[in-house]
Length: 248
Ligand code: NDP
Image (cartoon, rainbow, N blue to C red; front, side):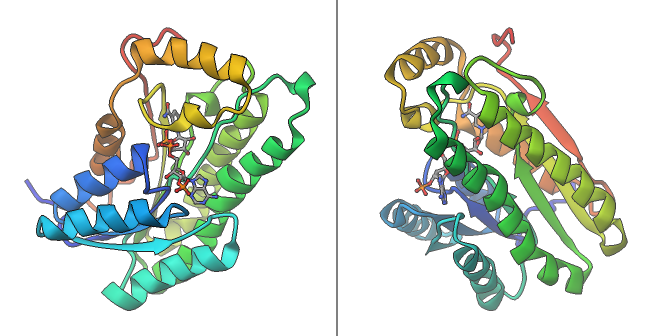
C-alpha cells in the first residue's frame, strides 16, 4: 500500500501534551518530519529530542497560538528548515467548562483566542506556502461539542461549531489550489484537557464522567494518520469519533 505519510513535513500546534503529542509521536514513527509548537517549551524540546534520538526528524518551536507573529514564525521556520509544509494540524485548544451564569468572561476570551483565532492564525500562516505549491493539507480540531451542545459547554461549543464552519468554507475555497481540509471531532480522549477547567465542581464532575470512558490519545493520532495517508486526490473532510462507551 502506498505510504503518504513518509517524508511529509507536519506542523502541529498544541504538541506539548495529549492529542498533539500522541500525533507527533505516531506520525514521526511513520516517517513524517514533525515541527512542534506549544508554549511549554521544555515539553516540546524534550519530545523533539526523544524523537530525534529514536532516529526520527523533529523540531520544537515555542509558540503561543494567540500571537499571530509566533504562529507565522512556526510555519515559516518549518518551511525554511525543510523546504515546505505539507500538513498543518491546528490542534491547540482548551475547554474551561462553566455555566454561562458564572460569567467567566476571561475564559470565554481565551477559548475564542486559542480555539478559534489560533486556528485562523494557523490557516493564515500556512495558506501562502500551500497555495504557491498547489499542495497541502490543513487539519482542524473540533469536537463532539462541535456537533451538539453539552452541559456547561456553551462557549466551548461555540468555538468548536465555529471551527467546523470555517473548515468547510476553507475546503470549498481551496479546491482550485489542491489543498485538502479535514476537521476531526473527538469524543472523550484521555489528555490534560480537563485539568484546565477552572471551576472545581465542574472539573471534578467532568473528570468523574470522562475518566470512566476516555480512550487513549493514540486513537486521535490514528485518525490524523488516516486522513494524511489517503492519496492526494482524496480529501477526508470530517472525522467524528467517540469512545464506544460514550452515550452522548
Ligand atoms: P491537552 O490539554 O492535553 O492539550 C492541549 C494543547 O493545547 C497543549 O499542548 C497546550 O500546550 C496547547 N495550548 C493551549 N493553549 C495554547 C496556546 N495559547 N498556544 C499554543 N498552544 C496552546 O488537551 P487535548 O490534547 O485533549 O486537546 C487537543 C485538542 O483536542 C483541543 O483542540 C481540544 O479542544 C480537542 N478535543 C479534545 C477532546 C478530549 O476529550 N481530550 C475532545 C474533543 C476535542 P501549552 O499549554 O504547552 O501551550
